[in-house]
Length: 263
Image (cartoon, rainbow, N blue to C red; front, side, top):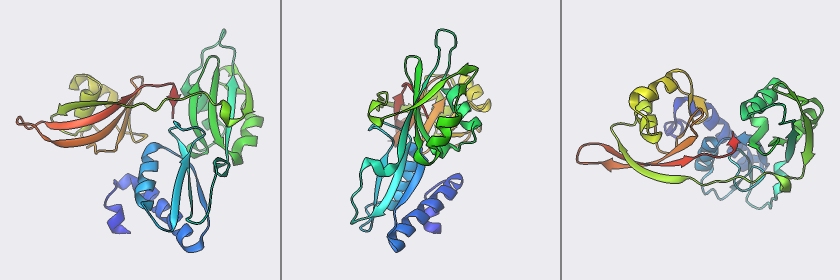
């Protein structure tokens, strides 16, 4: 197992070990394994571990094509699967927007307040006076019976067919630039067009996440494949680094994305 773990950061090791266990179960017992909702970094890790295995096949689904948080299904090569096998339900929250304003963190906080782990529900999408979010089937009845308030607003919660989910975009605009190092403070400054001195407070005040984990150390080193978000400024994906310039600056490619989802 150690050679596999060496390819990932220490904080990712528990998930890597879990992924290896899922794969081993399918390989040895020929039983399906359906995961909770995984963020894109977790999906990348799981896909790299399963690879092009001849016995274990892997599929992801989150409710529609461009969902970010998706459940993974690992299954024996001889089985056929469909979207229903992912056991995903769609909820709509309706609130009186003329009298109250709600945001993604309000919905996230209410679901957390119900005692739900983050893996039990997927993307949260904002519409006109409504929010949509996906959830695992085993908690759907609990949500339907208990989610009556979001923020300070009373809300109506109802199940809808997945086909009615608000549309989501999955467009990352690629940008090429150079940076002096791959430190978090330098990369945030470069990817968000900030000075380094203005990037630092975002990091030190816990407003920056790397791979969906708050990272408050400016010296943290980013690697290709990392996802970065700065509260209120959207998300970035560190796609690639490609050598140095004559002035010893590092060439990088990153993707930029701002949309109506909060994951």
